[in-house]
Length: 434
Image 1 (cartoon, rainbow, N blue to C red):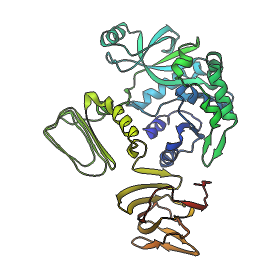
Image 2 (cartoon, rainbow, N blue to C red):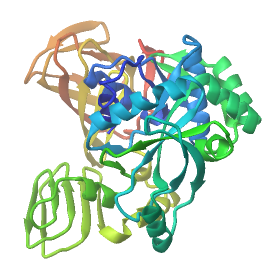
Image 3 (tube, one colour):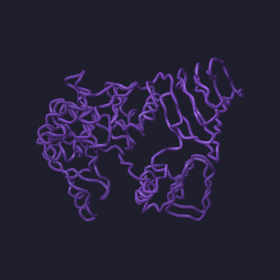
Image 4 (cartoon, one colour):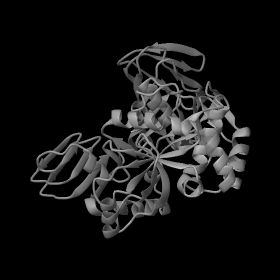
């Protein structure tokens, strides 16, 4: 969805994108951009989430550092837009107003009385199908939502914005001065880390948490609305993903290795093995290598309670994906047993792991694709497909990909302790010490 979000801006004349994310997602985000062939203007790592108003402030400060007249198109990465060309035309329609200092938000023309979205009340018309922003309205009940749709004066709040970076910071300073100051201090003290930009942690943690709606847009006198009718949906739940996906004649969405018999109106997704379902209706079933979710489609929001329980019990599934991204590529754990573990490791072309050693485990590497350059103590040698090597416990070693295609290998670890913190780094091109 991040790639889709970036791709739908191709019809616009844009500077390199600024991506705001957290530390844990940094390598996954970088890999998604690399796959798309996009070089970002910056990937800014929030020390901790502080909602959308500070996130947009960080992007605004970064943009203004090089472009005083910068206009930001603010796009969450969890939206579906079925007609990106209509979206591009809407952006172009509102660009001049944004350049002149109006903080524009996109109001989605409702196709029904949706109770899951907030609404915008349109103010006076301002030409070229633009409107002043009258007010924000919280998620309504069904009867109120129907009255909004019938009036024609309300649009869904999309959470997307088009605004001058300087104007936004001015309004943020007027209405949330502590937040604006904390963001300025955080960016003033920011440091580069590989391809990432880290705002000063202490300064940013002092920043209040609030959404751009509450902090600025509900208080400003400079708000405007761009009506948008482009097949938009905010994919905030698995049930919404079922709604926006292509369904078969029985109302099912089946992704991956899925076999069904007399199933209806269900979302069935398999990522690593056969998923077979029979005689079920209105279910969400999502299989991944580390967990399986089964939920009634109308109660899938209760997954939050499950996540909270996993956290309380200290379960790793609540915080770690099976596939872990690193600056050099990724790894995923395939089998974990008593005193052994099997991993699949992928190293991107031209990248290499740190020169390291382990106190508690030995490793056996088998190349299944590509070419590996292996360093083990004072020996450096090449492994090709179907070749393997053994790295004894306590030996300095390094893995590199000198080729032009991804290097894929299977790593078998054995030892008394197999944790990721059993790494002593001696040299690392990515500047990591642990």
